[in-house]
Amino acid sequence: MATWSNFNFQNGASPLMEQIIFFHDHTLIILIMITILVSYLMMNLFFNSYINRFLLEGQMIELIWTILPAITLIFIALPSLRLLYLLDELNNPLITLKSIGHQWYWSYEYSDFNNIEFDSYMIPSNDLNKNEFRLLDVDNRIILPMNNQIRIMVTATDVIHSWTIPSLGVKIDANPGRLNQTNFFINRPGIFFGQCSEICGANHSFMPIVVESISIKNFINWINNYS
Ligand code: CUA
Image 1 (cartoon, protein in one colour):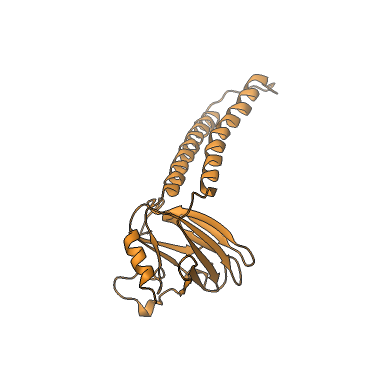
Image 2 (spheres, rainbow, N blue to C red):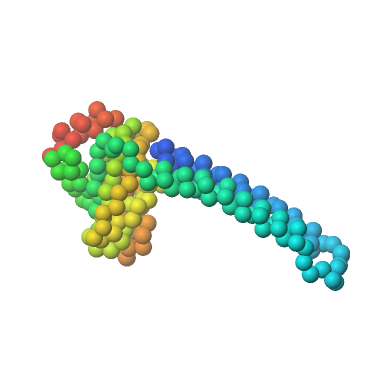
């Protein structure tokens, strides 16, 4: 989860999030190279006294500084497209979780298993225990098995919400009257926090998402004992 002065991404807990971080780093390197080159050129232009009153055009230099940025953009565009298609690919998911956005809480349905369904509300600050996180913890967590491909279907009942968990690399809008789907794979056991990320009304900040990732054995146990 995000903690104080965390300036970077949260650690990736899914293969897709790792790919997103790689792409971010790659693009940032290119950005830094451009910034350094342009600042160097501008410094040179500002601090010299060369003057050419009759300079109007330079065909060769204009050709070069048109083609070079175009090539640079291709180096960003191709990995970006690769990532886009990777994120969209569904790889035979084992289970499907349905997530419905409401003002202002999420509700979940495990339709594969005897239709388990529950609401998930943020725990108000006054009711927090010492091991819970303010504005992030919920009363009913999503339980999911690690090392399995999971499909999530997302919709909403009132306005647009967005089901977002940074460490899993998932961010998908919940639209009323539409059913969106995406998928992810959790690498390790743990608790992963997310928040709604569409401005959905007065309590937009207070509809967090919590995924509890456990082993498949414990997951089956949880399903069997769910009342
Ligand atoms: Cu739901 Cu913002």
